[in-house]
Amino acid sequence: MPTILVIEDNPAVITALETLFSLHDIRTLGADSPEAGLEALRGDGVDLVIQDMNFRADTTSGEEGVALFRQIRVRHPDMPVILLTAWTHLESAVDLVKAGAADYLGKPWDDARLLASINNLLELAETRHALDQRRAEEQRRRSTLADGHALCGFVYEDGATEAVLQLALQVARSDLPVLVTGPNGSGKEKIAEILHANSAVKNGPFVAVNCGALPHELIEAELFGAEPGAYTGAGTKARAGKFEAADGGTLFLDEIGTLPLAGQVKLLRVLETGRFQRLGGNQERSVKVRVVSATNADLSAMIADGRFREDLYYRLNGIELQLPPLTQRRRDILPLARHFLPPGKSLSEAAARALMTHSWPGNVRELRNVMQRAALLSAGTIDVAALGLPAASPPPAGVDAPAAAEPDRTMIEAALERNGGVLAQAAAELGLSRQALYRRLERYGIARD
Image (cartoon, rainbow, N blue to C red; front, side):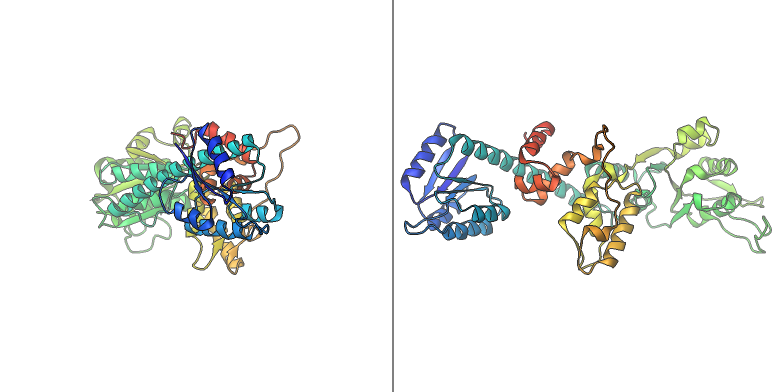
């Protein structure tokens, strides 16, 4: 049964409210002064406060109520407060609502409106409590991962990212080759670093090769090395390749889909036997290397087109880690954005909203570049203009707004958390009315269990 504390100097008002609430299974506590109300709040079990704005017969300014409200906010910042007064000072009430008051009603009050406000606030408080518990559990999980593994500075908060990380840590110590898939700039190399740092060969070298950045005629020489004169410009000294450099460690092959067919054949043989020959040489060399590869390409389609060997695909894809684009792990956006800022720089609320609604076609790489640029252009707090993001254009007539404009479950939960569960503020941040936000809470079933 929820408990409401009524801080009111008129005993008749407390009695009337107690009678009303008892008909709706709500327990009432009464306090006839600000001091008594604050003392009652020291105990556990109060879910909501209804407070008068004036406590002396000769006072109508509302200053006592303002002072009481501020003390409640300091001591109990999450406590929902409804303001109740016979002297409805609209300016003062609006100012207090902006400062965090949940609602205000004039005397005599409307029972239906008061009960509706109370029920909404109690439901929201329950949602906020469940959300806090969920966030605490997620934080414990992240702390456990960080304490038991090397995460290489990996920043994340979204459950989709955590699922990929958990799987990466689970397979890190195996000898199986790993294929990391995902769009450009999503963080595939960071996952490869984590795989290496938690593997049985973590004390060996980690060598990264971007296959897409190498001329096709030089890829074999880069991977397997070259003997003197093996190709034009090879020079007079033998050169070891990346496989030899990574011996006893991990070789990360980024953009593996760009490897030409001739290089694919040689790579397949190394994966199967651990042996290879340098370009232009006859001597067999052997290495022991953990291979992690990555691609943003559709390798299955490339196999069908004859551009990628099917047998190599199955050799590389012992375990596949699929890293989603940033738009599918939106809870990562703000933690990453703040991570990319230098000390002394912060985000305005408007800038945070802009980051959350941007589509991020360049993923984490684009976000890093945006934040570095904004930090250079801002003295302290970063505003929307400093981000330099394109303004979202309205949809053509007759076309629905894009789905990204509709707040999803993650965005709603994040807004509630940032605003301390204050519904009016969260709704304003999301561009919704309070009732529209309630409908979405019900639709998504947010923390109602």
